[in-house]
Length: 99
Image: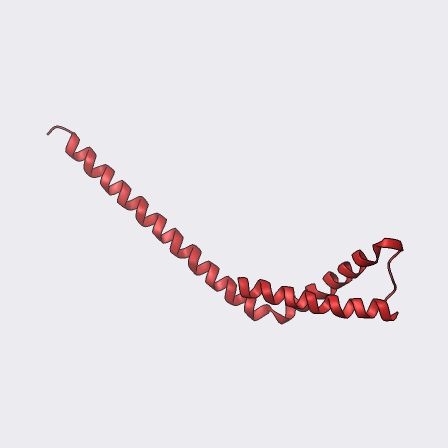
């Protein structure tokens, strides 16, 4: 997941540089007054989102498979712990009851 996040930040940084250059060269309009930096950030986010959605599809799928595997292992471990606790509790009840 860290790799995916870093790749996504890299795409955003690249878009930020491209948008910054396009705004200051006059290709994109400048923001009003002091809002120019916010305008550049907004444009970079809008451009980087669909790019990262398409470009990082395989990496996102790999991360998803890893996460699902970890969740499945955790569920199996929890279920195993529950069954052990139930068996131990049943055993202690059987020993404590008089015959």
